[in-house]
Length: 414
Image 1 (cartoon, rainbow, N blue to C red):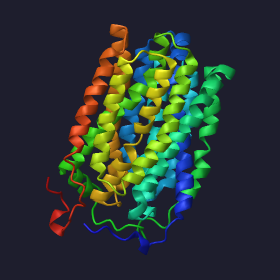
Image 2: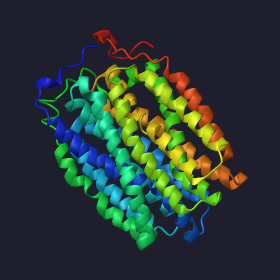
Image 3: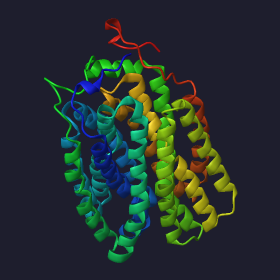
Image 4: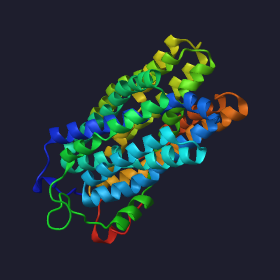
């Protein structure tokens, strides 16, 4: 397939796209990476089990995946600006609800559904759609790596801030402060208002309808394999991100160890995601993904076998940080490379939906099995086995662009 040349249409400045997109991802992802810090204070004050909290976060991840598909469709059709503003408002409302909910149902409704929908409209699917349309193909993987690195820097920057807010103001007040901060996404979104979209001057030529693009991707074996691998990514990172603080507390480590560990994951992932994006311009993306998943399994195995000390936790966090969101640039770049950019946000949303199903199971099973067994052993073993499986399913992916003709618009061969 020869990708339509977006150079025919006016572009936003690449610097503008990267700065505004990176800042939005930094805020949205940075805040959500600290939610594990609220598990113990909220469950202690409300008298809830860990499964109750974990289920709300699991619903959040599932809602993020479901709404991400529709947020991607809307962003592809009408531009990212309106979707980002709506997402910022929902994020603020969800954080307020998370702070004030007095029942588990309201907690799931706000922390789960509202914040999940908000994240769908303020994170990678929408931002990467703009990058795909506005950044030349030869620099696209690198640019996606920059945006993902910004999300990681947000984790490094904001997780310690969130821990400090909880200690200084209390867990409820900390959430209300973050609700005000997240509204900064709205003015930043102004910088991602794309040139004329829709009839009369779209930046990309849509040779397919939405349904044609969906049928083509759904039937394409490499797309199915990419989704399978991304499922594992979600399982691993959300289980670790939410339950690691409690896991360390159970073994008697001080709370600041967990905060520093999550911050280290964010710091090292700045480098990991940037490197993955840059390497995606030169190496086969499927091999990059296979290496990342296999390396995660090795890192988790060594972490569980080694004596648990602050030093071993920080080393594990640094290694996992290099591998944390480094799957995001090559995965989304592969979608753009295979299918083009006309429906990139929507197709990226579908791949991410698979990621979020994995996230749902990782965080929920972590809470459920902990309550039933008193430890996280089974989920750790699942994370290791799934990582090996993900490495295997990524290797057969065909990275070549689909060659479309009029007869192939209804689907593509597998």
